[in-house]
Structure formats: structure tokens, C-alpha cells
Length: 61
Image (tube, rainbow, N blue to C red; front, side, top):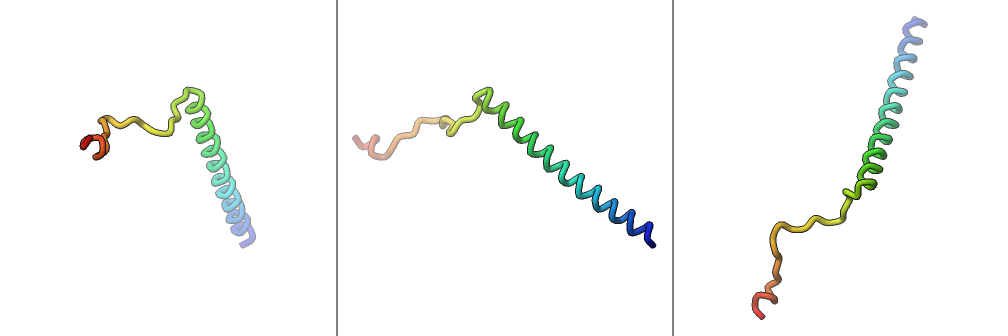
């Protein structure tokens, strides 16, 4: 009975450490992608539209 409890506790600890490990690597992967994005100047606020946009006021003048 005691051995089973130790195994269950160890499994819970290892599973918790695995969740933390994946979270840390997820953070570093995202940080790396951000740094690569900024370094190559691929980040931008808006994308140009593929057509010309005119207001109704411009057409009536």
C-alpha cells in the first residue's frame, strides 16, 4: 500500500514538472519568434488594401 502511494506521488510530481517544462519551452519559442520577427522588420501595423478606396464625397465632386 505504501509503495503504490509513493509511485502515485512520483507520477504526479513528474507530470507537474512536464507541464512546467512545456510552458517554459513554449515561452522561449514564442520569444524567439518575436525576436526573429522584429530583427527582420516583418512586423507591421496595417496591410495595404488590394484596391483603391474612394469616399462617396470624392465621387460627387
